[in-house]
Every structure is written in C-alpha cells, then in structure tokens.
Length: 133
Image 1 (tube, helix red, strand yellow):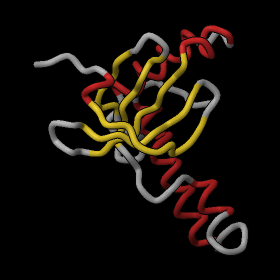
Image 2 (cartoon, one colour):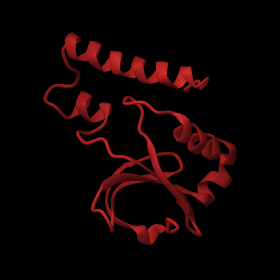
Image 3 (cartoon, rainbow, N blue to C red):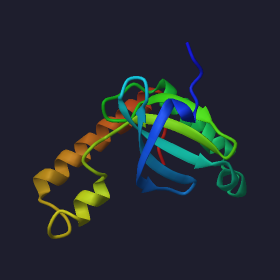
Image 4 (cartoon, rainbow, N blue to C red):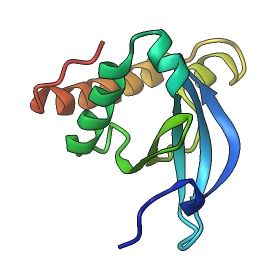
C-alpha cells in the first residue's frame, strides 16, 4: 500500500470556503474517482487555536459511517495544510439551494425533507456519542 500524498490526487476547482481553508474537487489519479478535498491551512489553525478542533473533526469522520454525513476516504498533510479527502456531494450545499434556485427559500415540503436529512445525520453522530455545534 502506497502512502497518500497530494500527488495521489488531481486538484480541481474550489467548491467552498471555510474558517480554516477551502474545499476543492479532487480526483484520485490511479482510479479516476472524484472526492472533495478539505484543505485546512496550518497557519490559520494555529492562529485560531484550532488544533484540537481539526484533530477532532478527523477522528469523528473516521468513525462515523452514515449516508447523511460525508465519509473520510483519505487524510494527508503537506508543509502548509492538513487535508481531509471526503466523499463528494454533488448538487451544491443548502445555502446554494436556498438562494440560487429562483426566489430565495423553497416550499415547506422541501424544507421538511432537508430537515429530516439533517436530523438523520445528527442521529448518526449521536450514536457515536458526538455532538455537532
């Protein structure tokens, strides 16, 4: 088994940004399989005293097995970043669907569906004794 490094993947466009870095689409060179790479910049983590938060996120994603929570496929680090390679969820995030699909918001039936999916994810996290903020 070969070690996983940034060279294991082809990096593509930015999918989103967060407090510690950004998420990009990526592809395993050997298989062509697509993932999302969450790149946590070490400088930002250290500046915001987020070392334990980053480690916690990795450990939680390693143990949770849910169709409602992204799964950790790989993890590696570079000189500048910690990288979590996650299952990719096509279709955009909830914010995209609220603001970019016609008029802001959506019908109650759709809101109930999204709320149910979120609750299922939280339930799976709680089964692992994990609380999400």
